Amino acid sequence: MKIVIVLAFVLISSISFGQKLKFKVNGYKDTTIHLVKYFGKNLFYADTAEIKNGVVEFDGAKQQPGIFAVFFPDQKYFEFIYNREEVQMETIYPDFVGTIKVKKSEENRVFMDYIQFIGPKKTTANKLSEERSKLAPTDAKSIELGNQIEAINKEVIAYQNNLIDVNRNLLVSKIVKMSMDVFIPEAPKNDKGIVTDSNFRFNYFRAHYWDNIDLTDDRLVNTPVFHSKLEFYFGKNMLIQHWDSILSQAYAFCDRLNPTSKTFEYSVSWITSNFGKSKIMGMDKVYTMMADRYYCSKNAEGKSPAFWMKEDKLADLCEKIPVQKSLVMGAKPPNLILRDSSDVKWQDFYSLKSEYTILYFWDPECGHCKKTTPKLERLYKEKFKARNIEIFSVGKAVGEDFGKWKKFIRDNNLTYINVAVTDPLFKAAMEDARQFVPKYTTIESLNYQTTYDIFSTPRVFVLDKDKKIIAKSISISQLEDLMDRLQGKQDLPKIFPPDPEEDEQMH
Image 1 (cartoon, one colour):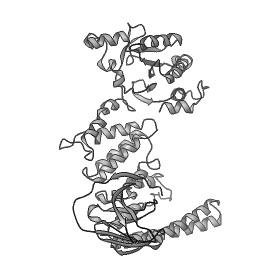
Image 2: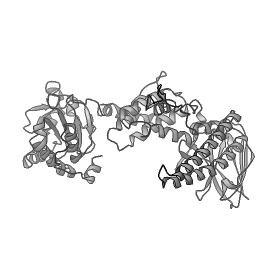
Image 3: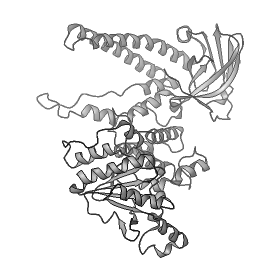
Image 4: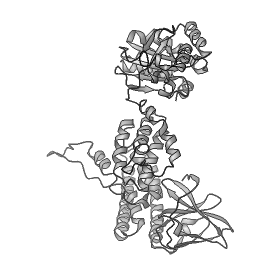
């Protein structure tokens, strides 16, 4: 198991209950020991104490219930449950689980018995599964092994159900129940015994996925089991990895939670962060819309729902959300009305009657742009122009870049639409923008770098006939492949084969 230790102290309750957490670890020298606790999948430092003559003690009154671990300097640790009761345990280093004895704590008597039961069962089942994987499904030995695995599974489920029934007042029973999958009934059949809904089992599983989890109990988020459940639910095995599908389920799930709970905090934070880090094109929409809904909105008290965030951090997060909302998949981004290289004629992309429009932002001094821009021109000449795909290219042309921009267009014979905030336009607008706005252009156009969050170049957006974003931040080879597929010409020879280095640069 890979453990991530986050170097931060957990906010702890000041309520004192006087529960002592005492551990005797035979075979370990005197040193400093850490108490760590789960919040989701990560372990956080919660307390520190000295182990002397094999005994270490922590103050449980500082902590909130959940799964904890005694963490040693050599990265070894053993877990236990804390639920506002005194805990006394004894073990031998380093075989913690095999030698552990619970002296005091009903939660941990049940928990350790469960761990010691489930461990060997899992090991045996894994070995049988590995052996079975080498055989044909119809092989007699394979069938026999399958029966053995099924018998183990039934034994484990029976143990778990009994544990839950007998210990309903204990936290451990909720943790064990949370780890179990819901029971799925057989799919409905017609009079001839034929299944009438082939997707019944999957749909039932998804609809009842959270049935075994008490989402009103914040103690459960202080376990790695909750994170595993959350991660699986929003993963590819459960949901189509499409931004709108993810958002639909994320809203439905988060809105059912108590908005002042730790479960809400963890779920919102993880979903937002997880998809914000995704390298799948378009998943930034999940991050942006989650941030807009749960961080940058106001609740009934006029405050952000993200009660765990400091105001300065919220301000930084929310500053760009209005801009980013207009740049997500499916959005219609703001029109740009700028001068072309003649520095006289105004051009905009909303008025283009093209089937697809490619917005391209570039800088004549950008090394990557110098390679990409001529390739884009070749695609336009040899494929796109004849297929009603227009390119609306916005270059950097202020100051010395004005001459360089015009020279690059001439030298590379760029025939698609090239516009910019030209240097003369920039200087005149700085003196008085009202001479251009709204007669010729817009403030959003003159400030296009802010409007389109252009912090680096080149930048690509692909728009459909309604000028809605259908792709972005893709390389030339990916753009060619996409347009060929969209127009049913995927079998055409490719001018630019995939380029892994270029593909990576565009993300």
